[in-house]
Image (cartoon, rainbow, N blue to C red):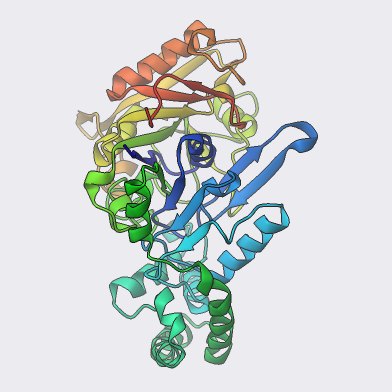
Length: 439
């Protein structure tokens, strides 16, 4: 019987989902991306030594690096087709067969140049603490157009006259805002139309009914892996609003963003760093200073190589937050956890775990709703002893240092969700398996 597994980030993104999706693809015949846009970034390291290859993916699902695995981009993804084409060509230049294995939903909303122009102009107009920290790639404005029912979708590309008329109307609206309100330059209608029509010819062979394809694969006994982008605490509904992304990043979106029923989602794997990171603005209760040498925060930043895959921005770093993970686990219905980057903590004398917060005159054990409340939280810490031994590359639970096992077991107990996988390095086989999601 086919089994479907959903992989979601449980923190503020950058948890290492790409490697785990790639590793799990050994047991899947298809990988499906269900939300977000090319503001996501997955880095995969395949091979060793002279044979090592590093793939950086934004839109193409992580399963593409596995021969014979089918990949799908669901309707929940906002799609910059020009970027997708460039990504496909780069992967093909690296020796991967992409076009025969990638299918794109005709229902994907399009990101077009005026969306990124709006994104950048709005962010530039904000002052200091008001900046969201957006990537400026047009993700938010594209989702806005979708909800406002003025957006263009992939299927519109194949009706040139209809596309041109819709495009003209929406660009008149957005150019008015750009010029008169945001004091930015207008975007050329002719240039956008020309590029879109050229890209349509390239993308057309990849367009297919993704929902129907997934159902057909399941009926044929094929396992499917559903891949989310960003992290739960950046979810538009459940994250630290307004410092969030513009889509739903939670497991439930795997259904809405692909067109399959919730009853077809059998296991939810929550990816969690052994510490916490966050890119961009927004509250972060357990944050540490990363700029002072010989401190835990600096070690997390330097050893963990904490730079954004898409933007290259420094990631803020902090202690593991059990109260935040409790919130994420409930929202997603997490079945099991995968802990990544445990090796980054090697050598620290002591480790702190945030077990809850002091919020005004009360103690809370769940991350509050909304950025304003979260910003007022003072973390409550529990201290555990660290370990001197290296955990890098360890492949068996019993080979971990005793204090490392105790740290993981405490994380598990505080959240109430079993740890099924531990990642101890970027390579596929640098992984400890306790229970397989596809079992």
